[in-house]
Image (tube, rainbow, N blue to C red; front, side, top):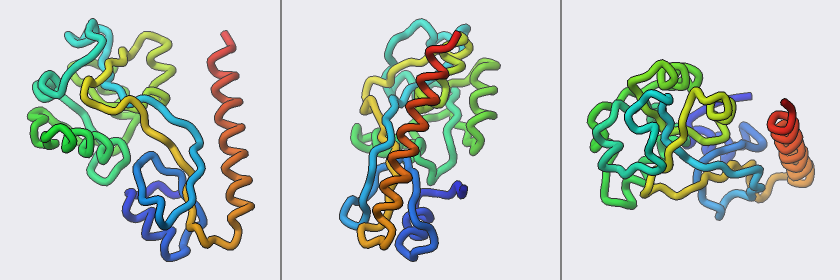
Length: 184
């Protein structure tokens, strides 16, 4: 399993260095076949004592004034947020109190500890939401969901095998979520 920046993944696919990738980003469908595995909402998360915790929705104006932790440039969540900001004539530089961290676990721990907010995939913090450690808040100007897709080159010789792998990923994801959220 390799975790790389988005552009590097596409380059590796194009060069045939990897057979497929699971990405959380937008991509050009011209060169790739894709299978949607699942989608999730993008949310701002804070701890229950944070001043924003009682809000259902925040705007970019409110977000710009907060202590925000974001993934480093080149990651799916960061690229997604930057593209959403750009759609609204904004820039990542509008976020004045920004910290960059490339470790989701560290980010979650820092947000739970207090004083920070961060953008997460809602599915990534389900346990923390369920336990009350994190409060999800919609970002008013952001598209509500992100697709996670398995992608591969359209001319790949093993496309049937890769489609089979994608089907197994979907089944496994659904089973894990079913077991995770139906058990007490």
